[in-house]
Structure formats: structure tokens, C-alpha cells
Image 1: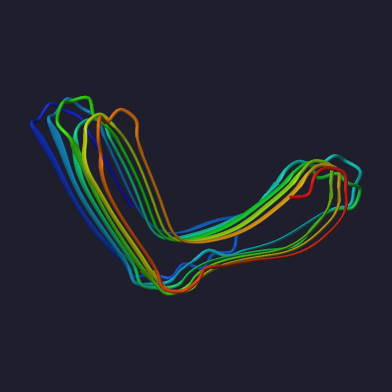
Image 2: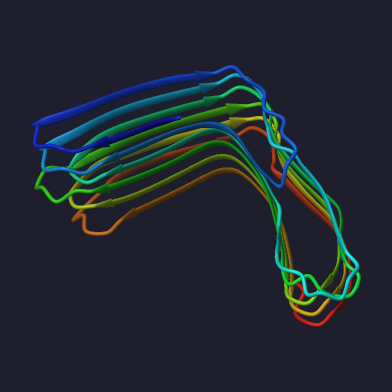
Length: 276
């Protein structure tokens, strides 16, 4: 994990970050996160910030949650929230002046987030809400630049990933007075840039050579509110928002080697609200 905060009035600030992880994480608890993270925050009056960050993950990132919660009494219960999140590389950069940013991420191993809720059962309908997300991401980058100068900012993003990225959610849920929300999401590469002020060129390249898949297997019964179930698999995702630039040169390349797959198997009954 890398976190840097720039303050001052120097003419130029430069940061170079390179990290490589060699670990496998397998945890069993209600909230699990596994992966490699870099975060950079910069805000000052300097002319330009230069940031170069490189991440290379070569070991599995696995976050596993196994839980069973049963409430048989008549006393009203609260909310149930269970999460499994596995990320190979993640980078967050927030700059408060003109900047030149280069982000490179490579993931060479499996990323998996199995979430198994074997029994979430309020026999007397006394659970309020149930929320269960399972998320697996190979590479994730978020860049925000608030440029108030007349000079143009520039961004280069390169993301490559191999291996399988798998999100799995298996659940049996019943006896809920509120809502049930379940999500199984697998993403190979995801990039987001939000830039204000003058922008020169934004180059982004994303390539995924591997299997991106998500599964949602669920049985839901006796729910008073709404029931929502989502399975999503995305090979590459890119979002660019430029709010005040007079013009922008955007070059975007995305490569996907295998079709992503998302599967939902659901048995749902006795629901008072909407089912989506």
C-alpha cells in the first residue's frame, strides 16, 4: 500500500512508485479484501506534478467469506452485510493541479472472491436487510485531476492481465422484513479518469488474456421487501470525464481474449416487493 500527500509550492513534484507482490491471501471472515493498493493525493500551488506508478502482481489474490446466520427468536434483528472482495492491483491518484500521470498495472495470476452464505435464515421474519456483494478485479485505476492552470494535463494508463478473474456468490436466504441485494461481479481491467481544466492527451490501453466469469447461485424465500440479484462479467471498462477542457485527444485501446461469462441460477419465492 502506498499513500502520498503533496503540499507545498515547489515548481515541480515528481513521484515514481513501483511495487510487486508475491503473496496469496485466503481469509475467512464477514469482510475480506485481498490485493495490492496504491493511493496518491496531491494538492498545492506548484506548476506541475509528475506521477509514475507501476504495479506487478504475480501471486493469487483470493478473498473468501463463509458465513451462516440463523435467528429463531422473536426479537427483531438488524442488517446482515457480507462481502468478499479480491483485487490484484488498485491505484487511486488525486491531484489538485496540472499533472502528467503514467499508471502501469500488470496482473499475472488468479483473482477470486468466493462468498458462501450457507444459511441466512430469520425463522420469524426478523432480519431487516441482507446485502451480499462478491467482487473480483484484476486491475483497477482511478485518476482525478483538478487543474486550475493554463497548462494541459496528460494521462497514460496501461493495464494488462492474465489468469482467471472469478466472482462466486452462493447463498440461501430467508425470513427478511426488508430487502435482499446480491451482486457477483468480475472485472478484468477498469480505468476511470475525471479531469478539469486544460487537457492534452489521454492514452489508455487495456488488455486481458484470460477468463472473466461471475456466478450467482441463490435461493431466496419469505422476503417482505425487494429482491435484487446481479451477475456481471466485464473484460475491460474505461470511463473518461473532462468537465471544462476546450478540447481533448483521447486514444483508447481495449483487447479481450476470451468472452466474459455471467451466470445466475435463482429460486425465489414468497416475495412482497419487486424481483430484479
